Length: 278
Ligand code: OGA
Ligand code: MN
Image 1: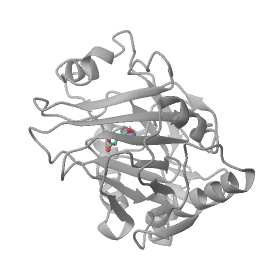
Image 2: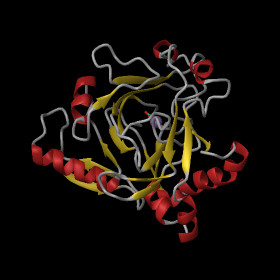
Image 3: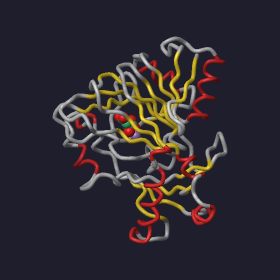
Image 4: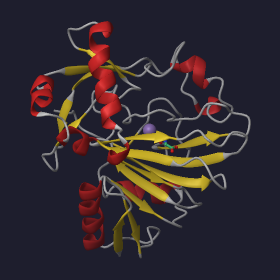
């Protein structure tokens, strides 16, 4: 197995391993250690079935249900992410960490490419621990103890359901009975496995600081969101059929680029259960 970083900020491509096979304990331990070191791992030409993708998530934690899309009948913790030729909006098309509006947001997610455009539809990732480290001591002190209010309706003008209902690719699996989730989390969280601090605010879900108005919160939230995704904190993954990515939501954000109008992109995603941020 070979592990090669793809940028100076985060992300590594892992080769020389077939994830369809049962992994040994030491292979699983090496992958887990690489995940903690690089925050997002990429594997090519894997073509995993939903069940194989679920098995892979168990290296990192337990599979979990995503509240807004119906899972596959054979694997409820796996959702299909489809953008059709006629869809204008895409899923995950702004910077975010997954499900920060839940009390226990996803630890990470595993995404596999089923059908990808010839070019376009890359995913960007950003390292929130690096972004935190680059803040001044004064700003780090100012953020100490601040709590963010995260809402699932954040990026959806007119409500999540109204937007999702318009997407040909996603509307059939949308959970119409899903509610609006709102949760409070520290603005700086400590990674439970590495002890590293990371910015835990994102422009898609973080509405305001606790005990402050949106207007009062906005300047600092805007600064943190822009700072967090400075180019030198990011990497970019170009998908190929069968490629797989696993990212650590506790210390990264990601952004699905929407630059493939008129083309089809179909992915399958498994969610990994997380714990309460502190
Ligand atoms: C996700 C997501 C990114 C992509 O699965 O959580 O944001 O590139 N997807 O499809
Ligand atoms: Mn996402």
